[in-house]
Amino acid sequence: MIEWLDTPLVTLFDGLTVPRSWLVIALASILLAWIAHQKRHSAPLWAAFGVGGFIAGSEIVRAMVPDAVQTLKRGEMPSA
Image (cartoon, rainbow, N blue to C red; front, side, top):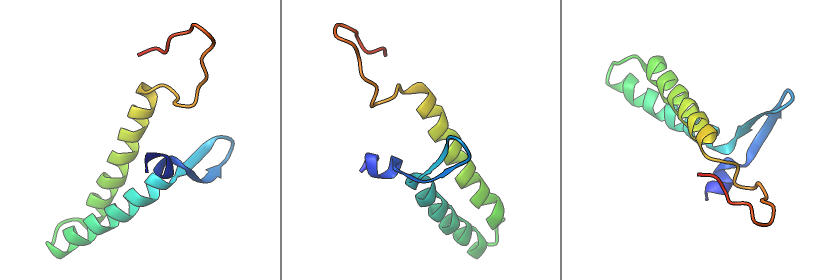
């Protein structure tokens, strides 16, 4: 399932890809905004926090975790 979420939907410009996970989080953020609207809180603010927080978190994790499809040469150990 992780591979499905990380599959790019659209490639923008030269290398910016929009994965499916961003779409799922955007929909979840819209749901969060609707709940905030029903409870009389700032819906756009909560939607922005939801989308922005996920994108920031996913980029931090992506920077920390090495590329899963990289190939190692014989005898080379993967780094932590």
